[in-house]
Image 1 (tube, rainbow, N blue to C red):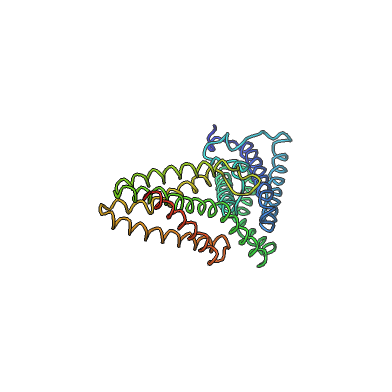
Image 2 (image 1 turned 90 degrees about the horizontal axis):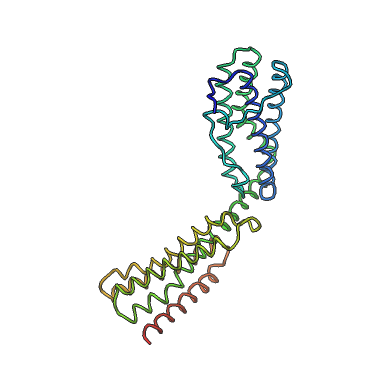
Length: 318
């Protein structure tokens, strides 16, 4: 790679043209990725991309005036100091926060490039254009706000916020809740069966630990391999898998830890109290994030937990 300080004015302009073209396509990718879920924000991205098109055209016209029609292909990867961006097609589906962070860092980097390039430019016309573009990059935030006011009315903002909440519930809350329910409920049977059969807190703890870790690994892989999220919009499969696996393990560990208490009677009393708290937490999460009526959620969760608990106790006392 070549150092920025070693670039000629011709190379600086050629690089600037490439950068503007890249930013233009990034905004187009943003618009394409957000169009279905966030149409108003997609319109903003198209407006920002149109401004980058104007910048590229101004740079191209000046380059042709100064150096002719042939524009060397100089990319950011050819010059030291640029942040390497992860390709957008690898980070789908796009979210509003991710887009805003990416766009903010992109505009800051471009503005700094123009400021440094203007300082080095000797030609008055080139320096003037680079200064103008640096000012334009500083104004991008104001332009974004102007476009937001034009495209994001109160109704559109509320609609996009609601969509973002639904995606969060689909991509994070749902796999986490599935894991928590599985870990909290499915491990009740082996833990309390071992406790009832042995009356030994340590043996019950070992069984609960094995059941929790095993269930976490199993649920994590099952969730990650269920679908890749490309059609369902459920997000990255391995993120869902990690969330589901960790929550499954935590759900089982919660009522397993009390069996570290040496006194069997005290341990099982504390474990039952923890189970009640776990089932209450699951009921609340289902009600808040999954739009399940509180009474319905409580009946489903508590009934399932009681049945599994009784199964474990019956088998343990057999």
